[in-house]
Amino acid sequence: MDSPRHTCLKLEVPNTSEPEQTESIFVKGTWFASRFHLSITNGLDAWICNGSEDDVGERSYQWDQPVSEYIELAERYLGFQQPGSVYGFFDAGNGDRREEVVSKAQSCEKLKVEAEKCLAQSERFSNEKFLGVLNSKKTKLRELRDKLSKQESSRKLPEEEEEESTDKTEIYGSDDEKSEEEPAKNLIGTSKNVSASRPRGRKRK
Image (cartoon, rainbow, N blue to C red):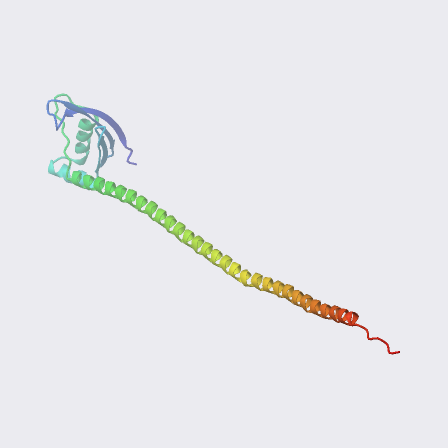
């Protein structure tokens, strides 16, 4: 069974942006008989290198070395810092891809934020529209109620006027009856007075 070996190395390498200064690079290695894995970081960025059997075989063939010697040499220099050796790391074309992935991730995050804003705005518009419709319904119901109240009021007025006119007619009728009865009584009284006041004739002897 291919049992792995692990190494951890801290390297001091020249700073690419400031050549006069150095920066620390940490390398964690996992070594197998014909392949290896490397995890590299400077505290800000991180890189991963997976040396497959095909990659190791091709590189050892280019260097005219057996695979075992190539793995041993790589483990020696990347597992322990060798005095007098100059170390440098170069991105083998994956830097642009990594930046592209980061850019896409940032774009997705921005799109997510924009989508959340749009969703919140849509919910706010929906609530405002619902409140507008509700207020409109309330206004229409209020107007309808006022209209019905006015109709009931206008319907009551003719009924009250009719009742008042009926009452007045009854009052006028009773007054007319009284006025008709009073002249009749006066006529009767007058006839009595007239008959009583007639002079009686003298009786003949």
